[in-house]
Length: 303
Image (cartoon, rainbow, N blue to C red):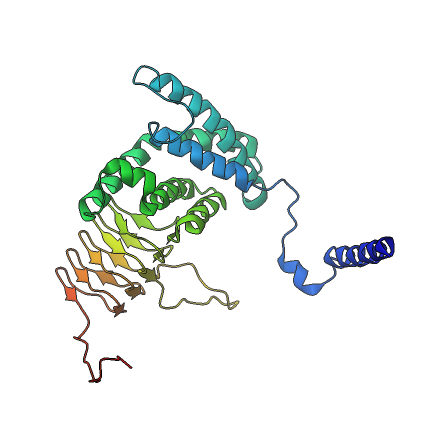
């Protein structure tokens, strides 16, 4: 009885496997069939963990590093990073870049150019850490922020991905930001432009769209959406990639669960209160808040 059941299952599984392998099914044409090896998500996770060890050597990594050994450890990290990242950039170019076939020469040059940007990325992250510490009285210090705060994890991934995107490396930047999105609930498109001293408090549910421009010293709270109100279709009916997300000026604060949509401008030093739906530009120093809630019940049940 047991063997007969196993044979039945094997026959069914073989039939299903055959159906999944059929290329003539019309809808399957939407699933690409790469001829080259694809980027490896596990390797990309390893790259990001290594970059965190490079940026914050006292916080991440398996080895204790002193001031006397830090430079030598950093050289080892650089060699490892070059090897891992070069491979993933090469695979990304092979599969998704159809403009050139000289990827074996292009990938190492791009990898080295990115690594050359690491000191500036680290400097920007230091400003983000400072901004989080300054805006959250619950933070006991920068060490806790680096270790624990989802905003910093999301910004490490975003700032790395943004530099790779500026180099026109396909797919890899989006994988990197989606790894942070999955871990933190903070969804930042790598194409967004974010200035210095950027902070997100709590962070869950924050969405920042591809063409969003954010100035310096901007603070967001959980549930904020900087999104598009709509998009334009081309002659084939497909959405066009054009500026469609907000421009946020310097020193703006946007409180929890507010939604800012479209290519509008929030002027510098403005405050957007909680639960606001904003689709029009506002000038500098604006204060946008909801009307005061009105209680229409008297029995205290709130129903």
